[in-house]
Amino acid sequence: MYCLQWLLPVLLIPKPLNPALWFSHSMFMGFYLLSFLLERKPCTICALVFLAALFLICYSCWGNCFLYHCSDSPLPESAHNPGVVGT
Image (cartoon, rainbow, N blue to C red):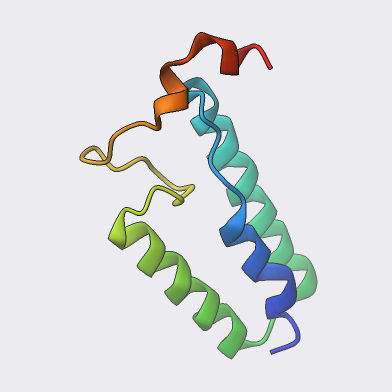
């Protein structure tokens, strides 16, 4: 389970508030995970635990899934504030 210390923080990285950045964020996270899996070659148990956690987060639509945005979940309030985009 040593290899999970590099995978679990990926689930805690928040999605950007600006919807225009969601695609580039998902591409970056996808390429990071792919390169991590190819370079470090985590054990099967760690990879399955991580994929199960990723599936549960994305299936529950808590808003932190980097693969897609759930259509029924509302945008955060700060996403409508134009001052946030400029920072």
